[in-house]
Image (cartoon, rainbow, N blue to C red; front, side):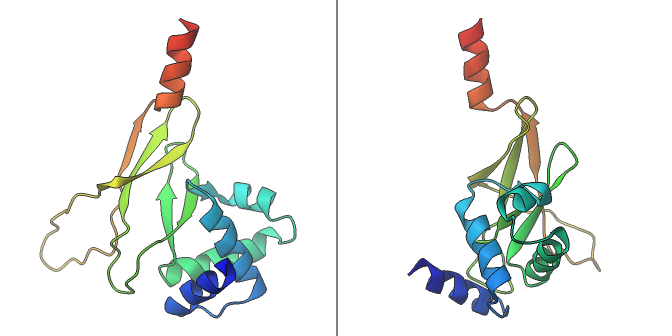
Amino acid sequence: MEENRYIQMLEHHGVKPTANRLLIVRTLAREHHPVTMKELEDELLTLDKSSIFRVLSLFREHRLVHVVEGGDGAVRYELCQSRHEDEDEDEHVHFYCERCHRTICLHDVPVPQIQVPEGMEVRSTGVLVRGVCENCLRRQSAAS
């Protein structure tokens, strides 16, 4: 039944469901945090780097993934849970842990509205907060 949900998700965003696209959507849906190309390559051994990149580029063009620039300079991808084609109600803040280097989605923290000068059009907004995550803080306290 999950497969039908992924097919519908692709079709809703105007993307033809092929085997590679379904594989990447399924992998992104399983993740609970944004992932790098390298992490996808390591997970999807049956696909080469260029195939993964082409699919991610297509997904980005059709607003099926969010592209998150992590605190370490690496670009990460996460599945967009928006139900609308023109409006992304799934934009949220991300937290980058400077110790464990994880990027964590803060789904309950909305991206603030940014006013830009007249004549400009905002297409997306990203906010990355840097610090130390609760797991690393707990480990630090336990070691002290």
